[in-house]
Length: 201
Length: 201
Ligand SMILES: [Zn+2]
Ligand SMILES: [Zn+2]
Image 1 (cartoon, chains in turn purple, red):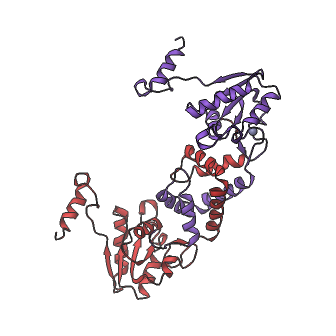
Image 2: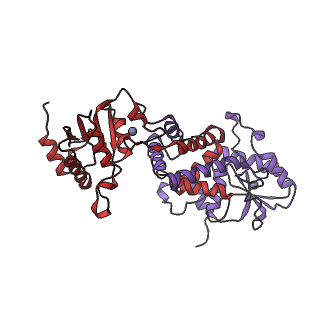
């Protein structure tokens, strides 16, 4: 705003809201005004929910997930198959896989990928924790659900090497045509992989 | 989420974030995760800013603006022209006009428009307050910056009637072609008004 038209508390709220992904400066103003108007219905409960989540949120010491308990909700869920471990780069990947609801496994969050150029080595990722979990036994399959990027694949290779000798099956996600995807929008690598892994109709 | 994958505090945070304009269920999840990751840099300051704004926000008893002080920042700004009063339907209109930074006037927020079908009559709007302000004297012009809708114009007519005899000039926003607007996208009413109000080149 060119001129002060509201108290510093409101200006600061708008500034910080503008940093939330999905909002920008313009929608931050709109959001702030909406919150102020819906003071009792939305602003107060949201503010309380933020304080509470902020106070309670922590990293799961078992898998690297974020949650309000340690071990996290996923690690302590007794209905999950503890013999299958899905390795992801980031918590957002864990959430995405859970939305797909295709497996009821446990997870291990690496916190990134190996990236020598950015100075990210094995010790900067949660890889030692993964090896320990597998070495403790009880895990029969590790699914490397890392991104299909150069860094993701390099990380997958490194982890596979580290797991050698631990008597665990290491698998990765299938490549192929995305559901609903149109062939002529896909790159050649994906198409070649989808052809190679074709299944009976 | 189909299955509980995080504590109730995080699920509740996502649910409430999804109600903020600009965010939806999907971006609310992304926003929550981003906040958790940027715990010290963004989550904590935003949570504090929300509590503080929530606690301090109030309606300006003079003009109907929302702010953390009463009278509000606009009403107490000594550099503004107190003789010109811009009447708007909503606080968001006040903010929009301030962004335009075209005038340094004071405002009066009606809180809506007359809408007999929705049961909104003069007493449901901040119209009495407007008449009192003008009757007190010191105001030479009232600019009716209401929306160019049927309800907005009906409200403008009603207010103009109420101000009769109070020795104040009542004006309204000019109709015309929006800056950067293309003629063939404009409705006939706007084009006719723009022609009628044409200015020397
Ligand atoms: Zn966990
Ligand atoms: Zn005010």
